[in-house]
Length: 358
Length: 127
Image (cartoon, rainbow over all chains, first blue to last red; front, side, top):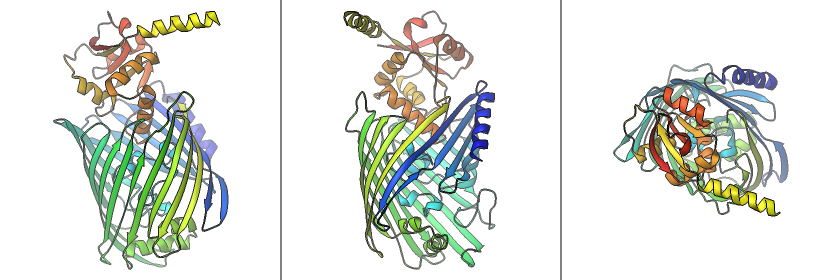
């Protein structure tokens, strides 16, 4: 399967590259983790990400194929066609990351360019136990325009539903659509203040859980960002998730601070970072109860543990030998609310190959 | 060793005299410095064309945006991966001049001495 996809993407690159503007990237890595809960060190090859972007005239096609370990499971993480004649009005159709916050939209599946070894839990992917809408299939309208000295942007998304229970890549399992919206300003080129929200109803029978999952999440998110290339990075995001049927809330967020302390001829940059994260919910919150039950039944032990009510502290660094190869090392301590505290050490060697046009 | 030092000296003299020109299609009457920054950073969807000569790009990007050319490339990589546009192309000056004449919304960073009689509008020269 992997060979077919690479062949197909190479064929597209060679066939159409000269006519439009095509780029093809491959990401991957190897990693080692020590988890205090397992008292064991694992070495593993990381997930591999193949991303192609083809732009011509006012159209852009983006295809992101992800090969997940340990089963070589292949999934289309993003696949969309975008029409973008105007800055203020673009239309995107397909599978994308819905516009919640800043980091989820900036980071993608190939984590090489991200400072952290993994996403903060509140914005993690659905299959990693992330509680928000990280993926969606549907339509997005968005735009950005300069008003005075600042840029003002908006994004409005209608998707089939959350990919925990409500939908998958090809089907909407209930009659309800989910809506995501974001409004933001960019006071400078490298900063952003944003407010985002979602309304996400689910009403499906889950064979795995052997029961009907009926939840309605109302999500409110805030983000504050300063993210200068090669400079200081500050990303703060907060989310409140109200589950309206059980009338129980959840909240979480993270603050990431990093700065390149060393830059040199042989080192692109040495960037220490600090991540503080929080995730908590009221007992009886139907959404979290169902997500945790699903992860437990799927025997996703790491993801189940990652979604524990906790305050997490992570210290680490990203050492980039050049923009294409990086070593990330981190130590995380989780102050868990209901379970025993845990810690882990992660080492990730990641790479990016600009296979065509990059 | 002596020859090597002379070569380094000559090369440094050559790069010292290098100037970067910001050029646009002649149909564009005026464009402000702030707008050029917006375009170079992808906030507006005009096509950005860079010089094959990296020293020229370095001069323009560092002076205009206050970041290194390498950081600029990484910034655009991140944007591309986020689905916010493709990376600006590096072209030789002949291709670039042709493309900017064809595409009215394109903006280019090119060696100043190569665009003097190109017919393109030179917005600013940076050294």
